Image (tube, rainbow, N blue to C red; front, side):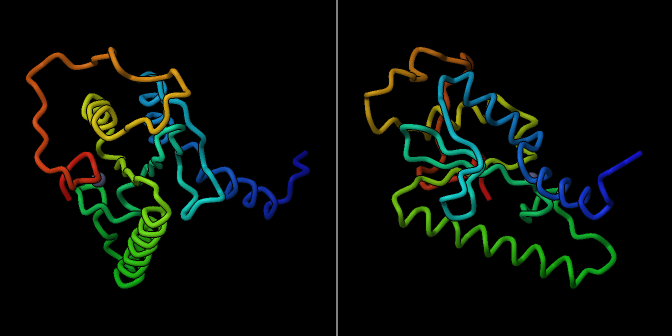
Length: 167
Ligand SMILES: [Zn+2]
């Protein structure tokens, strides 16, 4: 016998779903391996950032390409209800931008990792090593001395970029 009503179950599922998605877990384990510590799903900040990196004044959003309208191959609009999906994705995009602005205004560095980028974790590692700067020395956890990549030296293309790839 199932005591949980359908309604309640769908509420439970809805409550569970957005947290700890597979891409989020993958990004967190990269950060963890680099020596960073973090909080997840921080509700007190705009957009409830997926990850707040401790000691770095940095938040990380892990975006699903479809819902956040990345514009890559994974984010194409469904063939039916086109207007609905266009609007939905445009709204999501606007909300993301607004949250990022609010966070930046409050002194946070905002980093975005896209789901599709998880196919190359080495790039994400490099990106974090480049972008994450400790603000205080009180915590000893630091990535220095942990070189993951020994191939050709990484040349950054632009200091203004925020994602691990161009947009
Ligand atoms: Zn993508």
